[in-house]
Image 1 (tube, rainbow, N blue to C red):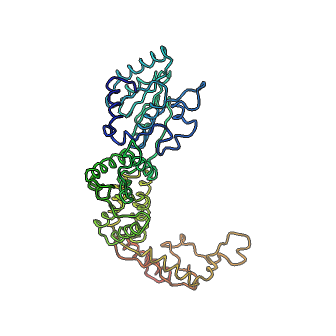
Image 2: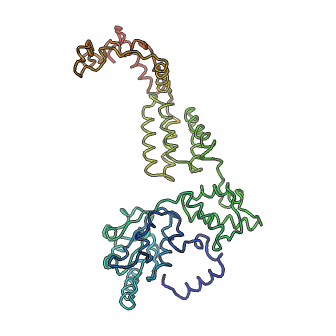
Image 3: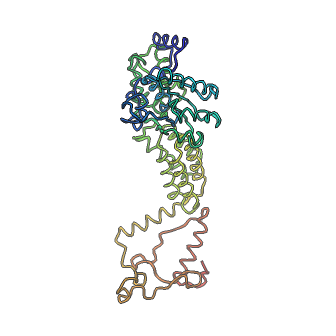
Length: 455
């Protein structure tokens, strides 16, 4: 960033009084090696390494880059590291406040700096998706001729928010959400580091777990909440940031929920039983507890798919379609939007007519098989396509249902050991009433009973 009198004064004050800057600013990494997460972007020889001067010069210069990722994943942090580590001229603009005039001023300054001092310019442009097409167009000559090396950041999909010519002249680097382990390391560093809280307080495990939950992969949110809670603890002269203090500070209660223990299974069980009992409000309550605790949305979606078959079945055949569609959507969008999809599926399943007939049918059939009730397949149902099969009588006497009125042949399909067994006992709930009527007619026709009608 180009220095001025006011910037220098502000930096001097912050060096003397660390509290003058937010904790998230004070804990910004000074080198790429201090950056948490994004290891896939920080390998040796990566574009970011080249931007800070690692790897030497040569005919291949540093590339302009577009940093795309959710808030709090390190886009501004990476630009800050570049500004501190590079010996190039560094200029920062925000698309919220800057326009074409400011961009052209930077480009003119970059050309003068390059011509007069042989010093290249790195331009960091935050929120580039807020620039109009014309404003983005103004960057093209400078990027193409490398008058500036552009480092642009966006939370929006650049394929929709950045013009194609600028995309083609830059490398798109995708930042991934930070993991709990990434944030845990950052929090502990902030607690111990002299730039942070300088070991003035400790953070118990339960408070740390709650802090990780509310951060939701956002480093800035984690450090902001940590600083607020630390201030409250110090004001009360407490030696640690307790869970109660953290809850009061961030105004968000901790959810009693252990993703690896009993709560994980107990709440999931309560969700499914509430759906089975058609209590939509209770089901939404348990869903909310799972969402708030950071439960894997794919786990919730899997449970809903199971419920759709186990508890609803053919009483509402669309229930499974709804659950599967929800699972696919959840896998594509993730939290926080996935909460809406999961809620939609939960409501649909809770209010659907219920039947466990399919569940009971397969278990009854399995019980017979496990009890040894199998027996040989009737000869006329066996495969008759291979050589010699006809000599064995395979397929002989088989009645082709499509050639018969009603499409049902009065012949035995099950082995003798289970002939006449009835595994599927449909209910009269919802759409399954129709299946009950069909099953009754077909079973009568299979027995050769007259007056059974055409199914």
